[in-house]
Length: 276
Ligand SMILES: C[S@@+](CC[C@H](N)C(=O)[O-])C[C@H]1O[C@@H](n2cnc3c(N)ncnc32)[C@H](O)[C@@H]1O
Ligand SMILES: [Zn+2]
Image (cartoon, rainbow, N blue to C red; front, side):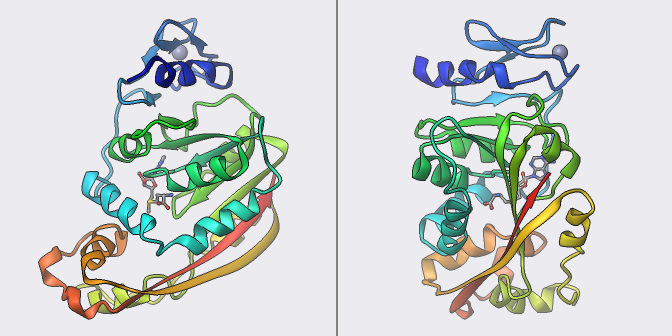
């Protein structure tokens, strides 16, 4: 990796805190460290691991993130990406957007490149962060737990949280007082065609939004809610990727599903904007 790939992570040391003891991290030659001696090297692959110990999440492996990257690149989620770019339009150079649960990093890159703001993507999954860090760029990537975000208090202008679990106490802590949370959750028709295809293999469970908005409203002030729906025709070569990139099919062996039967796919999501 180039010196620039290391340096961009050292440059954000003034925003970071130790995931082990919570004290401030400071830049060293090729690592960040706290006064208690906890030291975290910048990886030669262009990211920083800020965890006491690695965690393996079922299903979130290299195949998942490579497939997800191809599906996002093919445009199936463009409506979600465009909505996130719109919702962050007031941010520019000098603003910081944090993508909590960024996966392979497409949305953090889209927002920072559209507006010229800084972006930090964090995710528990090492394979996701490795995929995000590939190809360089100005964004910073952390292997980290969103339930224990290794950022100092009130440093972020926006937190993105897309198809990923939340921790609102942590989001509020890292957001500036006038910052904004932009949360994307699946809506009723999300991946409906894939769920229909998989129905015979899955226990029937009606759609349940798990009261996300109500739960969020107990922690933060909801400023807006809107629905984004995009239905796209599926070409045969993308069908396998759509199955591999969706937690819907985590428990189904790929060969059990008839890929030719997946003629279209719907991305149906709600974008919830909230303030501390
Ligand atoms: C369905 S994926 C969505 C990824 C990305 N936001 C996207 O929309 O493509 C869910 C992500 O949440 C991450 N995740 C789950 N629990 C997490 C936690 N406690 N801290 C950080 N990331 C977490 C997973 O590793 C995975 O990348
Ligand atoms: Zn420490």
